[in-house]
Length: 304
Image (tube, rainbow, N blue to C red; front, top):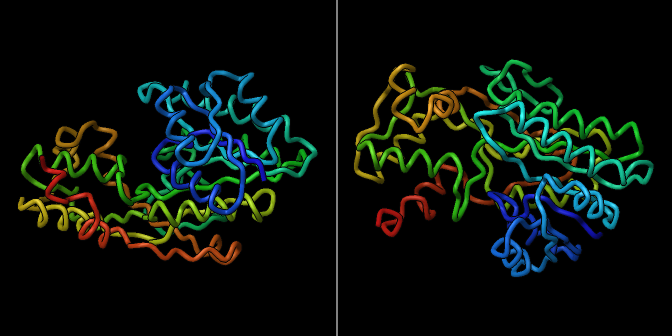
C-alpha cells in the first residue's frame, strides 16, 4: 500500500513510518523543513515539502495514495478554535480524493476527549465540554467520510505514548520536578492515566490501515489507568526529590501552565479491549512505570 502520512516526524510518527516501511508499505510523508525531510528519508519514506496549511499539497498526496494517515496537529494552543478549524480543513481536504474508493483515511485523536471519572470504551461518546473537546470536530470530520465510501477510522491515543526520546507530557513532568525540586501530583494522586508504548502504537496504526472497518473508533491503550501518584513517586525516587501533593490552586502555578495542571489532574481511564479484539493487536513493549524505571527518561545523562 502507498500511504500518505502527515505528522510522520512528530512524537509518534517516526515509529509509525518505520513500522509501515518494515511491513512493505511505501510511505510519502509531509515535511515542513529540510530537517524533517531528512528524517523521513532516513526512515525509508519519501518526503513532500509542505504543511497542513498547504491544501494543494495535501490534496495531491491523498490523490496519489492508497491510504492516508493523518497524525499532524498543531497551531496556537491559546486559540483552540483556530486549531480545530485547521485540523478539520486538513481532514476534509485529505478525505475528498478518497470518496467512493474504499481507501483508508485514519486520523489521530486522544483519549482525553472522553469524559472524566470512569473507564470509557471505544463505543462511548466523547465529552463536548471536556478537556480535549477541541479534538472532537476532527474525529467527526473523518468518520463522516465513512458514509461517502471511505474506510474512515479514528485512533485515540493515550495521553502518554511513552518510549525512547519521548518529548510529550512525561518529560515535561520530569523537567518540572527537576526545576522545582519536588515531584508533584494533585490531591491524592489517585487519578488514572492510560498509557501505551510508542512501538505498540505504531503496530496499531499499521493494523488499522490494513484491516480496520469503516467507521471504527480505536483506542491506542495498553494500560487502562496508571495512577498519577505512582508516576510521581517513581520520578521522585529516581531524581532523589520528594513526591508531594498539591492543591488544584497550587498546581495551577507549579506546572508549566494552568492547562497542564488540569491535564495532570485528569482522571481518564480508558479501555482498549475492543481495539485489541477487533484487530488482534497485542501490546508487548514495556509498561509506563517500567519505562520510567529502566528507559531513558531518568538516565544520568538526562540530568546533564
